[in-house]
Image (cartoon, rainbow, N blue to C red; front, side, top):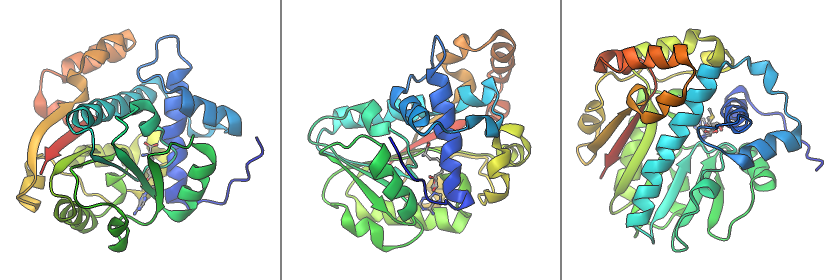
Length: 273
Ligand SMILES: C[S@@+](CC[C@H](N)C(=O)[O-])C[C@H]1O[C@@H](n2cnc3c(N)ncnc32)[C@H](O)[C@@H]1O
């Protein structure tokens, strides 16, 4: 397929890092996520993933966090089969394809307009899926989404690129737009922000990180009292760690003994409102 990719901004370009990690995960004999469509997109474009120099640990973290976000999303959509699904900063993620939600669910993928255009030509179309080309920090884009149904809002790899003020304002607008719903995203403690700025795997996005990091997951409840923490998922304590290579497995096993140490790694925060 001949696709001419537009010149993305560095922020938009960050989508390749996570997409390539999911594709590389899929190429292993025992993938964590098994995202065949991500792999197909990377192969179709013959995208040079080697430029990221990602190691096994980084690939595992991206694949596992996507899997955990999918699990929370699937649970909500099974309980709310006529809900709205919203993926913020969706990039070229194929979450809707992976989830295969009930037919009553309407799904919206939101990302900058240039990404939205490319998405429409690369990600398989679905009658219930729409792409919104918008900056999530702006106010108007939510108006295109029905406000009378419960909503599942998922964001994978977005929050690190927002300032605290932008994130707080986005959460307020989401919570006041929908009658009820659940919100799930990967978050970063202050240490994790520092680590992301210095780790080789995230070098390509290090200068784009604006989020200062939040150490206490209850902090978001204080930002908006309608948000109630359902669960903090610490990847070090998830069963898939048992499938990691021996040294990584040992590292996460030790990390899992301490909540504050586990929070230095990848965490998923799940709220309802
Ligand atoms: C690391 S990528 C993750 C993409 C996708 N969620 C995934 O897991 O592959 C971050 C994405 O967030 C998008 N993004 C960052 N800031 C945004 C904003 N203010 N509005 C809309 N999209 C944004 C970028 O364009 C990019 O696609």
